[in-house]
View 1 (cartoon, rainbow, N blue to C red):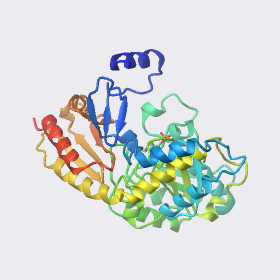
View 2: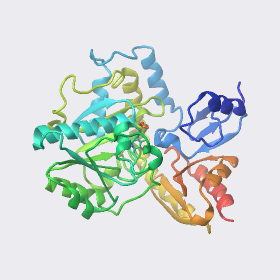
View 3: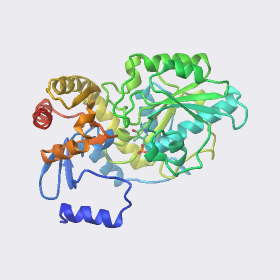
View 4: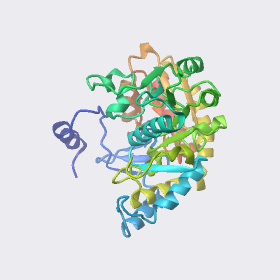
Length: 400
Ligand SMILES: *Cc1c(COP(=O)(O)O)cnc(C)c1O
């Protein structure tokens, strides 16, 4: 077996430097725990950016994928397959929507949402050709395609990738007045994260999404909720929009939909909106493949049967309360919803990276986001005793 050092050197030599990982190599995993090649054990508090909500190697998901692998893996959409229909039905049922378009990565789901909204704008709302506008929020993260980085406000993600896609207008997050003031007759959609994940788990005022939807309705604008990170029980409900008792017009999902095994994403909406998508006008070779469908159906079943929304809600509250109780001069703010938690450090702390590296030394894997924030988002199957252990480690690191 290669050592951690050898693995890191190989990546450094042969890989593009588009990531700056915490220096730990993961060799195997089970549930909330991962191991490096030397046998050291770590608590995963990132969950692959919430793509592993069900825990690593969930036996039921792994079995579903293994069974499917022995039967059928890929057909393309030139033909039907017997796994896609049941998967789409399950996805629509859990999201309170009617029709879904399957893709693979989150960024593809976002692109799909943008395409649906623009077509809807031209064909249903009556926006003049090529004039459609989509409102987005500052500090957003929606993925990495050239269109998506066009409306990013993160210079690192965007710089020197122009020319940029026109038709996007950024407004401050959590600002309903700005939303209403920015809508024009050509606005087709407001694309927003119910909680901004990559920005550092930024939680808007209660009712923000509900009021945003009211404003959108009033002006015949679609609300597109990007729940690629907040979805599938991460925030204590199946979807974060459910805290506001609403349903968005278009829902974008990915990450945990693949159960930690496979990239699976989708844009989900109502029939009258999705009808603007016609044969040949959008697609993906791997989108809706039988293996992905098997993984995703099992991934959703696990969330429901193991009551992971409720777990996320209860254990999230417990974890958050315990972190807040750590007496640390380094904490500026501790915030969270469900098991989606962030510790924002003071400027004096000197950046979060040294603390995520220290946490790694003590057996907790977490990743800093931007400069000063540490996100804690363990798999939702985490046990109370494991949270208690994490608290003791966090106390060691921060109660200085
Ligand atoms: C991760 C993420 C994406 C992009 O998903 P990929 O699978 O990396 O393309 C989009 N939106 C949000 C909110 C995300 O967290």
